[in-house]
Image 1 (cartoon, rainbow, N blue to C red):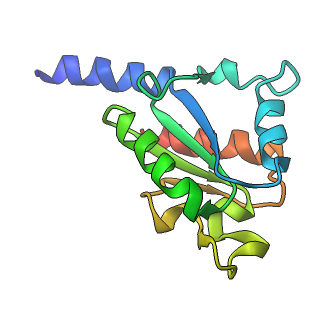
Image 2: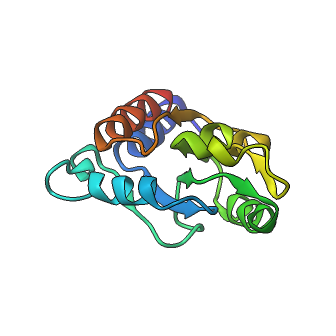
Length: 142
């Protein structure tokens, strides 16, 4: 692929990341805040970000909640179905480190125990402003 075509592809990826959300067993606080970022009040669609329901069409996997033994295989399967290049965002304290359930018998820990995480969003729950800032950081990485 020549340089001009690569530049166009990079431009297109930066302008329209499609996000797939996966909750691996959290309290749903971060899920609500993530969906709040999609509402007209915060409007992440102005950045080109679209929520996608299929992993085969997504570019970014946003994980909330700790990785449990029960959700580990499913999360890996979803990650493998996302086409390259792909990025993972860990949203909330549970996804970043396992949160308050990190040392329990059925929790592996944060998402980075299983997948390569590009951006972390701290907080319990993480605010929509932090989610938007993380998406802007991710767009800079892309």
